[in-house]
Image (cartoon, rainbow, N blue to C red; front, top):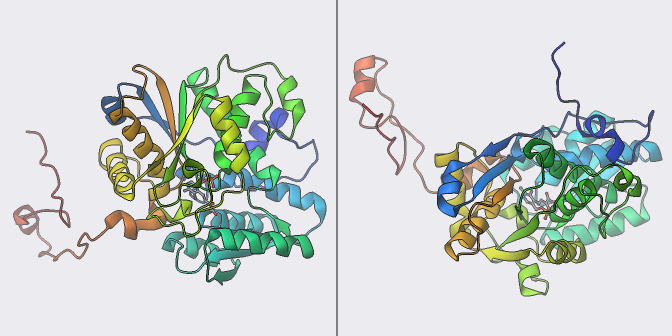
Length: 378
Ligand code: AN7
């Protein structure tokens, strides 16, 4: 029978804190494409790959952390899981709760969740709580709530989340044959940069501040080096760049609209231990990078995901990208989650033509909006 990717816990059994016979909740997450992006090589002078996390079952990297967090919940007997979310965590928690036979409750900043993500939480049957506040308020509420009620917290402050998410680094090393020179990713609540650094470190035979499962590092090293970790925040939500919390974070990339990241210390450790940096990019750069990925690479990502690529392009323009380096950018979520932002003001109502080939050929442009399709080469 043809091999199908089995999900993280089955694919990396030696490196995750689960034993034989432990319950496993999986939607076969992970195993996502690592795609070479010549359009980014051309802009940077490096060899650039994008790790397409939007290809996960619910369309974001959160599924990696949810298979481990929700599998763990089944060992505890708790029947309800809860999270605060800018959208993707709630979508993933709701889906994995269904697969596990648990109930889910999601606490969201009112009016700031992309339509696709909200739809996911609804169709997967989550109980929705909309807060007149931002993500940081939601996380504070859900932390208190889960401390005082028999409800499991599945935000990335739950160490099982980071355990799952670290496997993306394993996949990259497994595919490239060694760690890249540089890894670039968007930073919001800062769980993912922490998790990648843990993954790269464990594969190189080291532990990090956030390491939970020390047994993993007793395995033979699978890589010979460690990448620099480059983190990218949105201009209006850049607490790690400013060195202090942002009270009213604002950005078009609603997924990373976070002013007081929970994994602050871990993210700084990843940055400093790896000799990397964390910088910020404007919303304009985020949208421009999203367009480059869509129109020149063929990968449609949501705005927050494009922050990594925007940060890389900005660094290249500043002469900060070592020529010839191997670089991986994580693009964290699927563009289909937020089509409204991607289309911007573009007109999508197309005047219909008569149902004949002649009318089709005579049509001024087969596509909508400001951008006409490129003519085919003769
Ligand atoms: C697409 O869903 O925080 O730095 O509540 O959805 O690990 O927080 C989402 C975060 C990047 C930032 N890209 O990752 C949530 C949430 C996308 C995201 C991030 C998020 P972290």
